[in-house]
Amino acid sequence: MFMGEYQHSIDDKGRLIIPAKLRDNLGTTFVLTRGLDQCLFVYPMDQWKQLEHKLQALPLMKADARAFTRFFFSGASECEWDKQGRVNIPNHLREYAKLEKECMVIGVQNRVEVWSKEAWEHYVNESAAAFNEIAETLVDFNF
Image 1: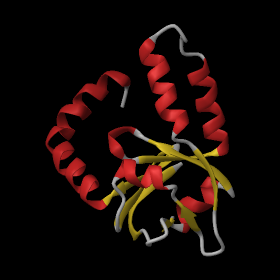
Image 2: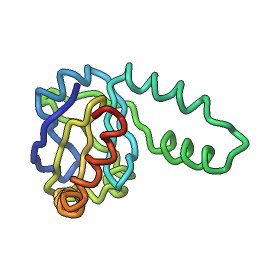
Image 3: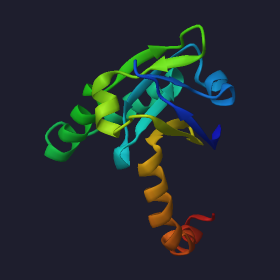
C-alpha cells in the first residue's frame, strides 16, 4: 500500500526523485500515465496489469469508454529508475500535469500520484471543505 505526502523538485531534464518508501513498492519497472484531476498516476506493474484487464472489459461500443481508454493508455509510459532513484517524466506528461519545478508525490492505496505543488495545494484547500460531507457518504460503504 502506498501512503504519505512528499515534496520534491523536478529538474530541467524532467527527472523527479520518488521517495524510497514509495519507490521500493513500485519495483524496478512501473507505468506512469495521465491521471484524474490533472495529476499523474504511477502504478507498479502488477497493479497496471489488473487495471488493464478491467479496462479491457469496458464496452467498445460506448463512446465514453473508448475516450477514457484512449486518454489513459495513450499517455502511458513504462519507466525505470536511474542510478539516483529518479524517474524521467516524458514531456507530454509533464505538460499535462503542469510540472515545472516543485512537485508533490503522494501515496494513494495502490498507486502513487505526482502533482504540481500549486495544483495539489489548490486541490487540498478545495477538498478540505467537503471532507466531512464525503466521509458521511462513505458511511454507506462501511467505512
